[in-house]
Image 1: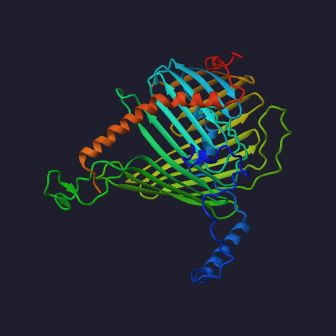
Image 2: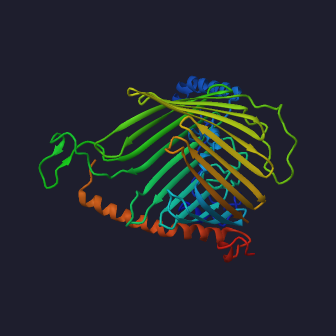
Length: 419
Length: 53
């Protein structure tokens, strides 16, 4: 990811570059007499500076990116770790810095999921993260991140792995992300491309996403003959964009120490003739960090405690157009026990439906237990036991009591070796 | 702005070709980066088994 101009300056370490700058230094502003523009704009500038100083003085916390909303709750519920059948995974840590890991995963014996082999590789340094995953059907999942502001070494955790390693991140982050899913030409399924840029400021977060952007799709067919060039070989519409895709704009702003507000705007333009947009609003309330309930420090080798994590988080997202509401509540009782509750409800369209889930996550020195139950009668539980630092054993179980004959159950057994 | 149908198809063909190249080349590219940038250079056997030295 080097720019074409970079190699010329490459052999010189920063600060020891040749003393022959190609471009003359630009005249510096302050030495010049104030121009008309600066005189005219100075009240606005000073107002802006006052605003920024006031804003800095408030010392608002970062709200976190929009995608991580409800993330505390998702991390408590076992659903992301659920699988059935058997899973066997071996991973090699090839290098720590830069992080380079590969892993092989086998899954078999599941009723709803075909037997698969997956190869996973990750490469990460402080500027970028690359991750490629290919399975036995030939489907490639590719992820690339570029950190415009250097990030401390991230330990990329597996999607199903329990510990989402939270290392202190810089306060301002600017990350470009690209995600692609590519299926082999002769199989079903769609290839997908997702381009995204996230900017996390000191008290706000914004992201822009383009999903399957295609600037040269077929021209729209609407408006009958109107607006079409009717003469010539290929009649073409004179207006109407042929840019298709799904475009998402997300913004979160902390308005007080506890409260963050924001929204999401989704514009769907999958075909040039169809356009649809959805707006979602969100409020997130976080309780103050607690310094009271601190357990004794863990033995060396254990993940560090996070005394500054908020005690509770309450998040609500609401889509006015469809009437879908999603509320979640996460409470950290102490460093080892977390509780979560979630309500997903639909008001509107003449329907009133809802599903509520409660769950917990408990951690001991060598094990992690998660459980949840929802109002549709589904009970899920996961036990992950660390037999040795590099060896983990997982059992998952699910019981769906709404199914006939007393319910349907699924269990999964997993084994993970990483060295 | 609408492109001529032929141009559009040509661009799509190039894009398809690029997609194929990416599909085949992405994971080898990660492995290449990993092996060249890591120090000390890990042994190839560790690709298969973490127990290899």
